[in-house]
Length: 192
Image 1 (cartoon, one colour):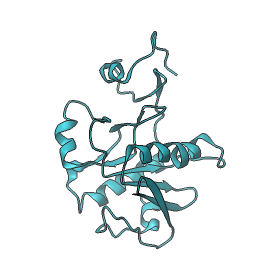
Image 2 (image 1 turned 30 degrees about the vertical axis):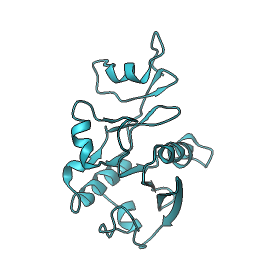
Image 3 (image 1 turned 45 degrees about the horizontal axis):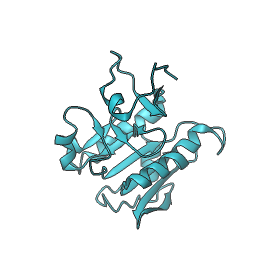
Image 4 (image 1 turned 90 degrees about the vertical axis):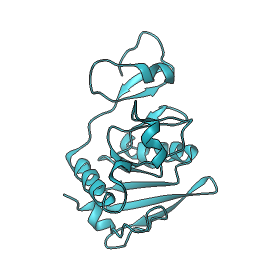
C-alpha cells in the first residue's frame, strides 16, 4: 500500500500524479498499486482485443490502463479489456477514466490471475468483488476468462442482476451485446 499523508477523495485521486505510469486502486482513501499482469493474461487480452476490432470500431476497444469508477472499495477498477460507448471517446479525452456520472461501458472483460483455491484473493477479486461492483455499476455484460478452470463465463445484466452462462471447449460464446463475434472458449483460452 502506498502511504498518502491524508486520505484522498476520488476527485483528489483523479488529480494525483506521482510522475510514474503506475496504476492505483483507491481503497478507503489510500492508494494501492495494481500488480502487473501475467504473460498468459496479457496474450489473451491482446488476442481478444484484435478479435473485437474486426467487428467493432477499434477506438472503442481498450485494454489496460483504462479505468472505471465503481461503488464500494476499491473505488476504481482497471478491467483487462473494456468496450466503450461512442460517447466515452469525448468524455474520457483528458483522462482514461469512466466516472460514475458517465454511462457504463458496453462490456468489461477480466482474465483471472492464477489462484490456489476459491478462497484465494485472485479468485475472489474477479468472481465475487468485481462481479458485485460491475453489477451495481450497471455494466450490461461482464466476461470472466479463467485460464486455470478453462472456462469463459458471460454475465448478462437482466433486471439489475447478472445471469451467468459458462462456456468451455468448442462451445461458441453467446454475447447479447456482440453476437457477431463467433468465438469459442477454446479459441480465447488458447490465444497466443
